Amino acid sequence: MLNEQQTLITEAARRFVRERIIEPRLDRALDQSGEFPHAILRELWEQGLTQLEFAEAVGGAGLSCHDHTLVLEELNYGCLGIGTSAVANSLAALPLQMCDNAAMQKAYLGRLTSAHDYAAFACSEPDAGSDVANMSTRYERRGDTLVLNGRKRWITNTDVASFYVVFAREAGSKGHKGISALVVEANWPGVRWESLIDKLGQRCSHTGDVVFEDVEVPVSHLIAGPEHGFRLAMATFDRSRPWIAAGAAGVIRRARDEALAYAMQRKAFGEPIINHQMVAAMLADMEISYQATRLLTLNAASEVDAGNLRGSHSACAKAFGGDAAIRATTDAVQILGGYGYTKDFIVEKLMRDAKLLQIYEGTSQIQRLVIARDLMRAHV
Ligand SMILES: Cc1cc2nc3c(=O)[nH]c(=O)nc-3n(C[C@H](O)[C@H](O)[C@H](O)COP(=O)(O)OP(=O)(O)OC[C@H]3O[C@@H](n4cnc5c(N)ncnc54)[C@H](O)[C@@H]3O)c2cc1C
Image (cartoon, rainbow, N blue to C red; front, side):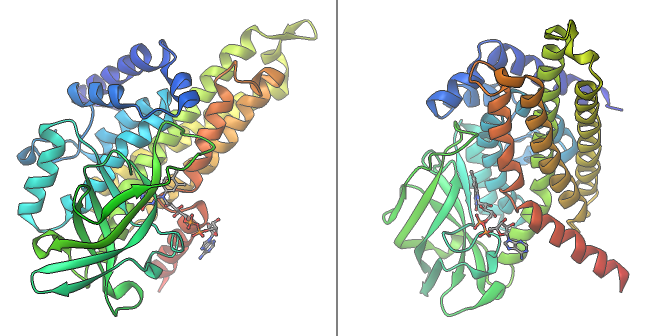
């Protein structure tokens, strides 16, 4: 049951998505061109549909994770690529929101609310994705300066971000203990992005490498020191995974709607294919997936809002949602038969886009590790 404010913001987001993304077929155009969705993201920012969980003190809307997931479901119903590009700012902002460096919060969260701008969360590396503690990007302390070197990979918003929230280890440290978090301006000497990746889906979201070569970072830009950085990264994922699950709910609902509309009008053996029970069953399964994903998402978001960062609820929502989304979108292609396998219909894009939900912000396997470890902790 949504309250009045939640109903209003959900309706506003739904209207926006229909009028600005689906009806003008922007989803398909951006998928084909791979163009970054600057204009639509600017409109979202102007309409107050981004930066929802930022505190009012830094110009944000001060809404809850629960409210945010409602909007993200709508946005991702329109296009997962646009949704990912929008949420990348929120992902970069989370470590700032959770750190205790008020000056950095004011400066960098304020930058995202006072003007239309982009940020990126830079944790993964060419040889360290799931295994975050194995990262090799490092910094050395020289007085009040941290000299940063390394390469981050798979960074969403890599080419458009004006600053990066970077996880890096203190030189000489090993494992999770030496990992810190720093805010790095994109235009500082020694910082560059390269190699935008040509992806299977979510093609309008931009992903690439960020390289740091002897970058001089003022120590004031350290938002979490070596004792706290790894925990901050993990806490970030615990808080952000409901957003990915909301994306799954959005794409499952879109797949359901597209497949349902087709099944009602397409005839085979003299009647609409929805009258064939095996087709109807696929649609029913999509609806089950949608309802379950949405409930798990809202449950995880409520746990986040209650301050429970155990991680298991978020991991359940993300793992279930990611897996359900790939099944639902694949079934949507199946229901459209040969037409589903063509670029004339959107369902093949939904399927390509959905695959990423099982990979980023922790793969489906890593979510299961998080859940199993939580079960073990609760058992002893
Ligand atoms: C399009 C895109 C956007 C991204 N955006 C960002 C971003 O903005 N910022 C950022 O920091 N990162 C980002 N990522 C990185 C993403 O989080 C990683 O790709 C992901 O965590 C997996 O890491 P990996 O690719 O190195 O795979 P690996 O860690 O090498 O895993 C390979 C396979 O092994 C499995 N595996 C690994 N370890 C285990 C284990 N212990 N038990 C069971 N299975 C295991 C994995 O589940 C996977 O199936 C993005 C990735 C993509 C593709």
